[in-house]
Amino acid sequence: GLVCRLDDVLERLAMPIIIFGWSDWALGRSSAPANSRSRLIVAALEWWIMTKLSGLRIVSLFSLALVALVWLLPSWGGTAVGQPAENFTLSPPEGGKAISLAQFKGKPTMVVFWATWCGPCRREVPLLKNIHREYSAKGLQMLAVAIAYRETREDVLKFKQNNELPYTILWDDDNKISQQYEVEGVPTVLLVDSKGVIRYRGFHVNSEFMTVLDSLVKK
Image 1: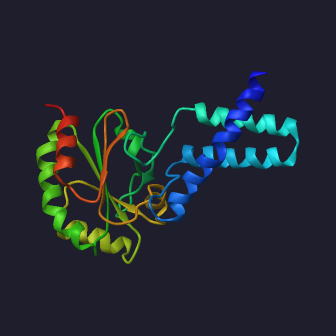
Image 2: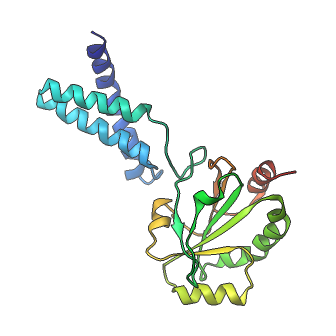
Image 3: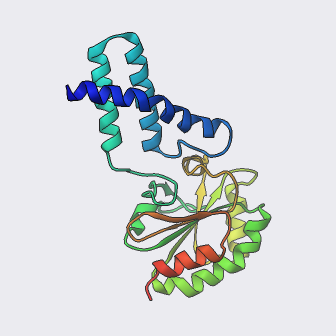
């Protein structure tokens, strides 16, 4: 029947998908599986393979249904270009009301992961100030997420005050958000469009970034 044919097709595809999904990560070529949905797909396929090997057909069919469900689900969040940005909530280093990425849906948003000790981050501060001055009036929101590595909340607050940073600074106290976004180096820069989809990810504000930014803001 149809289920048996699907089972046969998936059996041919499952192992290459699993190997591709994890080998790039193991060899350091990428951080794949890079988001919640891709990790779930690979995990569901691995479970399906194990149930196939067990010989329990009813369990195998249940696993097949789970794989199909996960595969067909819309991507609910990710960290790569083209994916809906995973939401996060953080507080400013001085404390106060927490801020969520989701609250800016409907507006283009720039997210920068950075650190006070990072040379390239410090050198980009004047550029970020210029971007804020020119594009905030056009609707751009800017969130600078400071990572909790080799620095304290007080270091970030002092840097913010000394440099008179005009954009929103957030403190990733336990580095949960930088891990969620698989930040491998700072600065890491993202542009999220008004629908909440990531349109740019890179390590610097460059010409590609500016091209994407100009396409997102109000003319």
